[in-house]
Image (cartoon, rainbow, N blue to C red; front, side, top):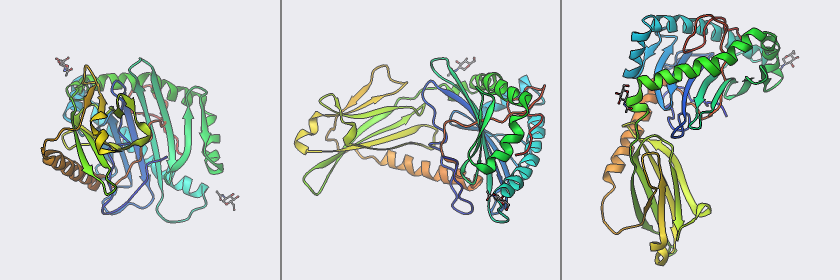
Length: 356
Ligand SMILES: *[C@@H]1O[C@H](CO)[C@@H](O)[C@H](O)[C@H]1NC(C)=O
Ligand SMILES: *[C@@H]1O[C@H](CO)[C@@H](O)[C@H](O)[C@H]1NC(C)=O
Protein backbone atom coordinates (compact mmCIF):
# COMPACT_ATOMS: atom_id res chain seq x y z
CA UNK A 1 0.00 0.00 0.00
CA UNK A 2 2.90 2.34 0.61
CA UNK A 3 5.45 3.72 -1.70
CA UNK A 4 7.91 0.91 -2.04
CA UNK A 5 11.57 1.77 -2.12
CA UNK A 6 14.31 0.76 -4.42
CA UNK A 7 17.49 2.45 -3.54
CA UNK A 8 20.59 2.89 -5.56
CA UNK A 9 21.34 2.61 -9.23
CA UNK A 10 18.35 1.82 -11.32
CA UNK A 11 15.91 3.04 -8.77
CA UNK A 12 12.82 4.27 -10.49
CA UNK A 13 10.18 6.77 -9.75
CA UNK A 14 7.02 5.43 -11.26
CA UNK A 15 4.96 8.29 -12.49
CA UNK A 16 1.76 6.51 -13.19
CA UNK A 17 -0.20 5.20 -10.27
CA UNK A 18 1.07 7.70 -7.80
CA UNK A 19 -0.04 10.55 -9.91
CA UNK A 20 -3.32 9.60 -11.43
CA UNK A 21 -6.20 11.97 -11.22
CA UNK A 22 -9.59 11.63 -12.78
CA UNK A 23 -10.63 14.19 -15.33
CA UNK A 24 -12.46 16.71 -13.24
CA UNK A 25 -10.84 15.76 -9.98
CA UNK A 26 -7.86 17.79 -8.89
CA UNK A 27 -5.46 17.13 -6.06
CA UNK A 28 -2.64 18.66 -4.08
CA UNK A 29 -0.34 16.07 -2.56
CA UNK A 30 2.86 16.05 -0.55
CA UNK A 31 5.18 13.09 0.00
CA UNK A 32 7.79 13.08 2.76
CA UNK A 33 10.50 10.47 3.03
CA UNK A 34 13.13 10.00 5.70
CA UNK A 35 15.68 7.18 5.49
CA UNK A 36 18.01 5.76 8.12
CA UNK A 37 20.98 5.26 5.80
CA UNK A 38 21.32 7.76 2.98
CA UNK A 39 23.69 7.05 0.14
CA UNK A 40 23.95 6.48 -3.60
CA UNK A 41 22.74 10.00 -4.20
CA UNK A 42 19.68 9.50 -2.02
CA UNK A 43 19.38 12.31 0.51
CA UNK A 44 18.11 11.21 3.89
CA UNK A 45 15.12 13.52 3.71
CA UNK A 46 13.05 14.43 0.65
CA UNK A 47 9.74 16.25 0.35
CA UNK A 48 8.01 16.58 -2.99
CA UNK A 49 4.71 18.18 -3.91
CA UNK A 50 2.31 17.44 -6.74
CA UNK A 51 -0.69 19.17 -8.23
CA UNK A 52 -2.50 16.44 -10.15
CA UNK A 53 0.29 14.70 -12.03
CA UNK A 54 2.78 17.55 -11.96
CA UNK A 55 5.72 17.61 -9.61
CA UNK A 56 5.84 21.30 -8.72
CA UNK A 57 8.07 21.60 -5.67
CA UNK A 58 11.05 19.73 -4.31
CA UNK A 59 13.03 19.93 -1.08
CA UNK A 60 15.80 17.67 0.14
CA UNK A 61 18.30 17.55 2.96
CA UNK A 62 21.21 18.20 0.56
CA UNK A 63 20.01 21.57 -0.75
CA UNK A 64 17.87 22.50 2.27
CA UNK A 65 15.83 24.76 -0.02
CA UNK A 66 12.28 24.42 -1.32
CA UNK A 67 12.68 24.73 -5.08
CA UNK A 68 10.20 25.19 -7.93
CA UNK A 69 9.94 22.32 -10.40
CA UNK A 70 7.51 23.86 -12.92
CA UNK A 71 7.40 27.42 -14.31
CA UNK A 72 3.87 28.19 -13.10
CA UNK A 73 4.64 27.90 -9.39
CA UNK A 74 6.94 30.89 -9.70
CA UNK A 75 3.80 33.03 -9.95
CA UNK A 76 3.45 32.49 -6.21
CA UNK A 77 6.21 35.06 -5.65
CA UNK A 78 3.96 37.83 -6.89
CA UNK A 79 1.33 37.03 -4.26
CA UNK A 80 3.77 36.03 -1.54
CA UNK A 81 7.34 37.30 -1.83
CA UNK A 82 8.52 35.23 1.16
CA UNK A 83 7.04 31.95 -0.08
CA UNK A 84 10.28 30.11 -0.86
CA UNK A 85 12.11 31.30 2.25
CA UNK A 86 9.24 30.34 4.50
CA UNK A 87 8.73 26.96 2.84
CA UNK A 88 12.44 26.26 3.22
CA UNK A 89 12.32 27.06 6.93
CA UNK A 90 9.27 24.90 7.48
CA UNK A 91 10.87 22.02 5.66
CA UNK A 92 14.13 22.37 7.55
CA UNK A 93 12.05 21.85 10.68
CA UNK A 94 10.37 18.80 9.12
CA UNK A 95 13.78 17.47 8.24
CA UNK A 96 14.77 17.54 11.92
CA UNK A 97 11.49 15.91 12.88
CA UNK A 98 12.08 13.12 10.41
CA UNK A 99 15.53 12.46 11.86
CA UNK A 100 13.80 11.79 15.16
CA UNK A 101 10.96 9.89 13.48
CA UNK A 102 13.25 7.35 11.87
CA UNK A 103 15.08 6.85 15.15
CA UNK A 104 11.90 6.53 17.21
CA UNK A 105 10.06 4.11 14.96
CA UNK A 106 13.12 1.93 14.61
CA UNK A 107 13.21 1.69 18.39
CA UNK A 108 9.49 0.90 18.58
CA UNK A 109 10.17 -2.08 16.32
CA UNK A 110 13.32 -3.07 18.26
CA UNK A 111 15.44 -2.75 15.14
CA UNK A 112 19.03 -1.73 15.65
CA UNK A 113 20.49 -1.20 12.20
CA UNK A 114 19.77 -1.42 8.51
CA UNK A 115 17.88 0.55 5.95
CA UNK A 116 14.54 1.90 7.11
CA UNK A 117 12.15 4.52 5.82
CA UNK A 118 9.50 6.68 7.37
CA UNK A 119 7.07 8.21 4.93
CA UNK A 120 4.29 10.65 5.18
CA UNK A 121 1.60 11.41 2.61
CA UNK A 122 -0.84 14.20 2.94
CA UNK A 123 -3.08 16.10 0.63
CA UNK A 124 -6.50 17.12 -0.48
CA UNK A 125 -8.75 16.57 -3.43
CA UNK A 126 -11.42 18.63 -5.14
CA UNK A 127 -13.79 16.46 -7.13
CA UNK A 128 -15.87 17.28 -10.17
CA UNK A 129 -19.09 17.08 -8.16
CA UNK A 130 -17.81 19.71 -5.73
CA UNK A 131 -17.00 17.34 -2.88
CA UNK A 132 -13.64 17.41 -1.14
CA UNK A 133 -11.31 14.88 0.36
CA UNK A 134 -8.30 15.10 2.64
CA UNK A 135 -5.89 12.65 4.17
CA UNK A 136 -2.75 12.44 6.25
CA UNK A 137 -0.89 9.27 7.01
CA UNK A 138 2.44 7.72 7.87
CA UNK A 139 4.17 4.59 6.71
CA UNK A 140 7.19 2.66 7.92
CA UNK A 141 9.26 0.43 5.65
CA UNK A 142 6.55 0.49 3.01
CA UNK A 143 3.70 -0.48 5.33
CA UNK A 144 0.95 1.50 7.01
CA UNK A 145 1.94 3.00 10.31
CA UNK A 146 -0.53 5.67 11.38
CA UNK A 147 -3.44 7.38 9.62
CA UNK A 148 -5.38 10.46 10.60
CA UNK A 149 -9.17 10.37 10.61
CA UNK A 150 -10.28 13.95 10.24
CA UNK A 151 -13.93 13.17 10.93
CA UNK A 152 -13.28 11.80 14.40
CA UNK A 153 -10.00 13.66 15.01
CA UNK A 154 -8.27 10.43 15.92
CA UNK A 155 -5.42 8.35 14.58
CA UNK A 156 -5.56 4.74 13.45
CA UNK A 157 -2.51 2.71 14.42
CA UNK A 158 -1.58 -0.17 12.14
CA UNK A 159 0.08 -2.23 14.87
CA UNK A 160 1.30 -2.30 18.47
CA UNK A 161 4.37 -0.21 17.73
CA UNK A 162 2.31 2.54 16.15
CA UNK A 163 0.24 2.69 19.33
CA UNK A 164 3.20 4.46 20.92
CA UNK A 165 2.77 7.39 18.56
CA UNK A 166 -0.99 7.26 18.61
CA UNK A 167 -1.09 7.69 22.38
CA UNK A 168 1.00 10.82 22.04
CA UNK A 169 -0.93 12.39 19.19
CA UNK A 170 -4.50 11.57 20.11
CA UNK A 171 -4.07 13.56 23.29
CA UNK A 172 -3.51 16.88 21.58
CA UNK A 173 -6.95 17.90 20.43
CA UNK A 174 -5.92 21.36 19.29
CA UNK A 175 -3.29 19.91 16.97
CA UNK A 176 -5.79 17.48 15.51
CA UNK A 177 -8.34 20.20 15.01
CA UNK A 178 -5.79 22.22 13.12
CA UNK A 179 -4.93 19.20 10.96
CA UNK A 180 -8.56 18.91 9.98
CA UNK A 181 -8.76 22.63 9.25
CA UNK A 182 -5.64 22.44 7.15
CA UNK A 183 -6.98 19.55 5.07
CA UNK A 184 -10.45 20.96 4.56
CA UNK A 185 -9.69 24.64 4.11
CA UNK A 186 -6.08 25.68 3.66
CA UNK A 187 -5.06 22.82 1.43
CA UNK A 188 -8.09 23.28 -0.82
CA UNK A 189 -7.46 27.01 -0.99
CA UNK A 190 -3.88 26.38 -2.14
CA UNK A 191 -5.03 23.75 -4.61
CA UNK A 192 -7.37 26.29 -6.20
CA UNK A 193 -4.64 28.87 -6.31
CA UNK A 194 -2.15 26.47 -7.89
CA UNK A 195 -4.69 25.34 -10.49
CA UNK A 196 -5.13 28.98 -11.34
CA UNK A 197 -1.37 29.55 -11.70
CA UNK A 198 -0.92 26.40 -13.76
CA UNK A 199 -4.18 26.53 -15.70
CA UNK A 200 -2.47 26.43 -19.11
CA UNK A 201 -1.19 22.92 -18.45
CA UNK A 202 -3.32 21.58 -15.58
CA UNK A 203 -6.72 22.49 -17.01
CA UNK A 204 -5.98 21.73 -20.66
CA UNK A 205 -7.54 18.84 -22.57
CA UNK A 206 -5.90 16.95 -25.42
CA UNK A 207 -7.70 14.45 -27.62
CA UNK A 208 -6.54 10.85 -27.88
CA UNK A 209 -5.50 9.48 -31.26
CA UNK A 210 -6.97 5.97 -31.39
CA UNK A 211 -5.65 3.13 -33.58
CA UNK A 212 -6.60 -0.53 -33.79
CA UNK A 213 -4.12 -3.09 -35.09
CA UNK A 214 -4.24 -6.87 -35.30
CA UNK A 215 -1.80 -9.70 -34.69
CA UNK A 216 -2.29 -13.31 -35.78
CA UNK A 217 -2.10 -15.97 -33.06
CA UNK A 218 -0.94 -19.61 -33.44
CA UNK A 219 -4.40 -21.01 -32.82
CA UNK A 220 -5.98 -19.32 -35.87
CA UNK A 221 -7.34 -16.64 -33.56
CA UNK A 222 -6.13 -13.08 -33.65
CA UNK A 223 -5.48 -10.31 -31.15
CA UNK A 224 -6.89 -6.85 -31.73
CA UNK A 225 -4.88 -4.14 -30.06
CA UNK A 226 -6.30 -0.69 -29.38
CA UNK A 227 -3.97 2.19 -28.56
CA UNK A 228 -5.15 5.62 -27.46
CA UNK A 229 -2.31 8.08 -27.59
CA UNK A 230 -1.52 11.67 -26.65
CA UNK A 231 -4.43 12.53 -24.35
CA UNK A 232 -4.71 14.74 -21.27
CA UNK A 233 -5.86 14.55 -18.52
CA UNK A 234 -5.01 10.99 -17.58
CA UNK A 235 -8.53 9.76 -16.80
CA UNK A 236 -9.94 7.80 -19.72
CA UNK A 237 -12.58 5.09 -20.25
CA UNK A 238 -11.66 2.40 -22.74
CA UNK A 239 -13.57 -0.79 -23.56
CA UNK A 240 -13.69 -3.44 -26.24
CA UNK A 241 -17.23 -3.89 -27.57
CA UNK A 242 -18.66 -6.56 -29.76
CA UNK A 243 -21.84 -5.47 -31.50
CA UNK A 244 -22.15 -2.79 -28.83
CA UNK A 245 -21.78 -5.23 -25.95
CA UNK A 246 -18.95 -4.52 -23.52
CA UNK A 247 -16.51 -7.47 -23.47
CA UNK A 248 -14.83 -6.64 -20.19
CA UNK A 249 -14.01 -10.19 -19.06
CA UNK A 250 -12.08 -10.87 -22.28
CA UNK A 251 -10.23 -7.58 -22.36
CA UNK A 252 -6.58 -7.38 -21.43
CA UNK A 253 -5.55 -3.90 -20.37
CA UNK A 254 -2.32 -2.19 -19.40
CA UNK A 255 -2.10 0.73 -17.02
CA UNK A 256 -2.44 4.15 -18.55
CA UNK A 257 1.14 5.40 -18.87
CA UNK A 258 2.78 8.79 -19.37
CA UNK A 259 4.46 10.10 -22.49
CA UNK A 260 7.46 12.41 -22.34
CA UNK A 261 5.36 15.41 -23.41
CA UNK A 262 3.04 15.20 -20.39
CA UNK A 263 0.24 13.39 -22.24
CA UNK A 264 -0.77 9.76 -21.67
CA UNK A 265 -1.30 6.58 -23.62
CA UNK A 266 -3.65 3.67 -23.02
CA UNK A 267 -3.47 0.12 -24.36
CA UNK A 268 -6.02 -2.70 -24.42
CA UNK A 269 -6.33 -5.90 -26.42
CA UNK A 270 -8.81 -8.68 -27.02
CA UNK A 271 -8.50 -12.10 -28.63
CA UNK A 272 -11.05 -12.66 -31.38
CA UNK A 273 -12.00 -15.05 -34.14
CA UNK A 274 -10.80 -13.36 -37.38
CA UNK A 275 -14.18 -13.85 -39.03
CA UNK A 276 -15.84 -11.76 -36.27
CA UNK A 277 -13.24 -9.03 -36.46
CA UNK A 278 -15.55 -6.44 -37.99
CA UNK A 279 -18.00 -6.69 -35.08
CA UNK A 280 -15.45 -5.26 -32.65
CA UNK A 281 -15.01 -1.61 -31.72
CA UNK A 282 -12.59 0.05 -29.39
CA UNK A 283 -14.75 2.46 -27.41
CA UNK A 284 -13.09 5.54 -25.90
CA UNK A 285 -14.51 8.22 -23.62
CA UNK A 286 -12.46 11.19 -22.55
CA UNK A 287 -12.97 14.77 -21.35
CA UNK A 288 -11.59 16.13 -24.61
CA UNK A 289 -14.26 14.32 -26.67
CA UNK A 290 -17.79 15.63 -27.15
CA UNK A 291 -18.86 12.16 -28.28
CA UNK A 292 -17.23 8.81 -27.45
CA UNK A 293 -15.02 7.35 -30.18
CA UNK A 294 -15.71 3.89 -31.63
CA UNK A 295 -12.79 2.66 -33.65
CA UNK A 296 -12.71 -0.51 -35.77
CA UNK A 297 -9.76 -2.38 -37.18
CA UNK A 298 -8.72 -1.10 -40.56
CA UNK A 299 -6.25 -2.58 -42.96
CA UNK A 300 -3.76 0.23 -43.34
CA UNK A 301 -0.19 -0.88 -43.03
CA UNK A 302 0.36 2.38 -41.22
CA UNK A 303 3.28 2.07 -38.92
CA UNK A 304 3.25 2.70 -35.22
CA UNK A 305 6.73 4.12 -35.25
CA UNK A 306 5.60 7.43 -33.78
CA UNK A 307 4.00 5.69 -30.88
CA UNK A 308 6.98 3.45 -30.28
CA UNK A 309 9.34 6.41 -30.27
CA UNK A 310 7.00 8.21 -27.87
CA UNK A 311 7.02 5.26 -25.50
CA UNK A 312 10.76 4.92 -25.59
CA UNK A 313 11.23 8.60 -24.89
CA UNK A 314 8.63 8.31 -22.12
CA UNK A 315 10.48 5.41 -20.55
CA UNK A 316 13.79 7.28 -20.79
CA UNK A 317 12.20 10.26 -19.09
CA UNK A 318 10.84 8.11 -16.27
CA UNK A 319 14.30 6.64 -15.74
CA UNK A 320 15.84 10.09 -15.67
CA UNK A 321 13.44 11.22 -12.99
CA UNK A 322 14.21 7.95 -11.25
CA UNK A 323 17.89 8.65 -11.23
CA UNK A 324 17.32 12.03 -9.71
CA UNK A 325 14.99 10.92 -6.99
CA UNK A 326 16.05 7.37 -6.48
CA UNK A 327 12.66 6.61 -5.13
CA UNK A 328 9.87 4.41 -6.17
CA UNK A 329 6.55 5.61 -4.93
CA UNK A 330 3.60 3.36 -5.05
CA UNK A 331 0.14 4.57 -5.77
CA UNK A 332 -2.27 5.31 -3.11
CA UNK A 333 -5.01 7.77 -3.65
CA UNK A 334 -5.74 8.47 -0.08
CA UNK A 335 -3.20 9.39 2.46
CA UNK A 336 -3.07 11.70 5.30
CA UNK A 337 -1.92 14.89 6.63
CA UNK A 338 -0.32 15.55 9.88
CA UNK A 339 -0.44 19.29 9.83
CA UNK A 340 0.59 21.34 12.75
CA UNK A 341 -0.58 24.18 14.85
CA UNK A 342 0.32 27.50 13.39
CA UNK A 343 -1.14 30.88 12.98
CA UNK A 344 0.67 31.20 9.70
CA UNK A 345 -1.23 29.65 6.84
CA UNK A 346 1.00 27.78 4.49
CA UNK A 347 0.53 25.62 1.48
CA UNK A 348 2.23 22.98 3.54
CA UNK A 349 1.96 22.30 7.22
CA UNK A 350 4.09 24.33 9.52
CA UNK A 351 4.48 25.21 13.15
CA UNK A 352 4.69 22.35 15.59
CA UNK A 353 5.29 19.06 13.89
CA UNK A 354 5.71 16.65 16.76
CA UNK A 355 7.88 13.62 16.20
CA UNK A 356 6.49 10.13 15.93
C1 LIG B 1 10.48 -4.77 21.73
O1 LIG B 1 11.11 -5.22 22.89
C2 LIG B 1 10.33 -5.01 24.09
C3 LIG B 1 11.17 -5.37 25.29
O2 LIG B 1 11.88 -6.57 25.08
C4 LIG B 1 9.04 -5.82 23.98
O3 LIG B 1 8.23 -5.61 25.11
C5 LIG B 1 8.27 -5.36 22.73
O4 LIG B 1 7.12 -6.15 22.56
C6 LIG B 1 9.15 -5.46 21.48
N1 LIG B 1 8.44 -4.86 20.38
C7 LIG B 1 8.32 -5.42 19.18
C8 LIG B 1 7.56 -4.70 18.14
O5 LIG B 1 8.83 -6.48 18.92
C1 LIG C 1 -5.60 30.62 -17.90
O1 LIG C 1 -5.88 31.80 -17.16
C2 LIG C 1 -5.67 33.00 -17.92
C3 LIG C 1 -5.86 34.18 -16.97
O2 LIG C 1 -6.96 34.01 -16.15
C4 LIG C 1 -6.64 33.01 -19.10
O3 LIG C 1 -6.45 34.18 -19.86
C5 LIG C 1 -6.39 31.79 -19.96
O4 LIG C 1 -7.33 31.72 -21.01
C6 LIG C 1 -6.48 30.51 -19.12
N1 LIG C 1 -6.09 29.36 -19.94
C7 LIG C 1 -6.74 28.19 -19.90
C8 LIG C 1 -6.20 27.12 -20.79
O5 LIG C 1 -7.69 27.98 -19.19
